[in-house]
Image 1 (tube, rainbow, N blue to C red):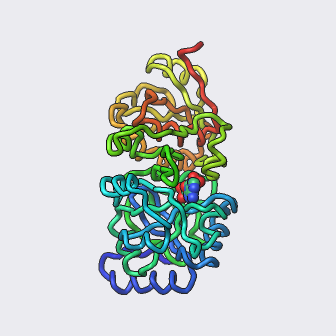
Image 2 (cartoon, rainbow, N blue to C red):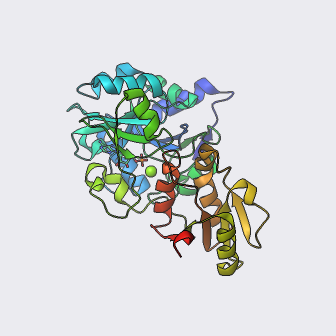
Length: 341
Ligand code: AMP
Ligand code: MG
């Protein structure tokens, strides 16, 4: 496996990547959300390789990444006018739009659904790679299925280093959580997976309400519409325990329950108050900073061999829904509400 940086030998390295993708291989590429495991979306065998390499369930469809809107013509039957408004506002960026697919797109990408999720990533290298190869790339996150999503090259090496020929280094992912997935193939539009682009921002552009599958309960009929959200996800080896409560309650709980094999994930201003090791995931007032650090910290918790991590949860609202959605899966829905005791 080779890590490519695309700094000094950019042309040469782009050609290596192009050859690999043209010949049906898979390549790990950076995006602004998380690292992706990419293959030619029109090559069924290459797409199947993604599922094999990740150990991804065969009914969990892939998002297709494009570098310009002309690529939509061969992928979707039509772009609804309202969806176009969202593209104008949020592309390139972390918003996936699910539209009616064209028949020529292999079923392997969409797992037999008649819709396809598409987005234009914002990361310079992702755009350059797609532009260079000239075809759309199907790409889920570049982790082993079920593990925390990869936000740094080292995470990809850890999970897939022996299974891929090339990993492109794009530095630390700026957003750190996967895209918002919005179903626009039918109305009303539905957020199938919350992301950093939230319900309010989408409604502001559309000037109308959208529905949201927040994914905060273990079983809901949303799983029928977005198969991927039903699986255990994002989980480190350590047990994750989510805690709701003010700082004092949280601190008391952790100090009573924790031993040296346990750690806590807390807000920046709460550090240095605990007898156990703490990881700061940012300021409660800046949900984007919290989101960016979630997966990086969950991986670090494993690296340092902690058996359990207590997570101090932010107040739940439209902006923090993405954090809740990911952490509640990582915790396998284990949540303790200290306010209710
Ligand atoms: P990943 O790329 O691993 O972050 O997962 C992609 C997510 O997008 C999963 O939750 C899928 O269920 C969802 N998704 C992709 N394509 C579709 C589609 N055609 N319809 C509904 N959900 C989709
Ligand atoms: Mg994933």
